[in-house]
Length: 84
Image (tube, helix red, strand yellow):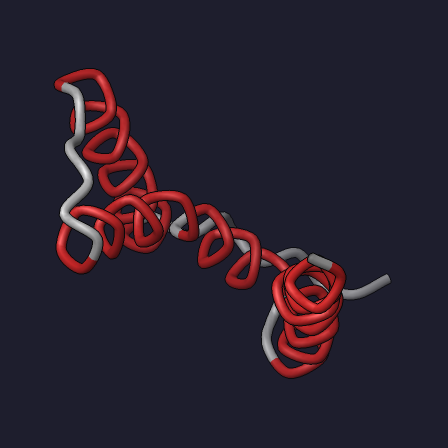
């Protein structure tokens, strides 16, 4: 199914990448990277809520660890170095 493949390739990959690059230009790269780590967790949550997918205990624990790491990074940001 060529239209479906084109939609996934363009909509799910190219547009998402271009939006990420556009966003990095507007916020610091550290913040963009932290936000990007939430993508798999949010995808799993949407699949569980919307598509009624089941999550294994290891997937739930992994998602919780990612969320914990993101919260820790936001709570304790790295020190700012002066521009050279």
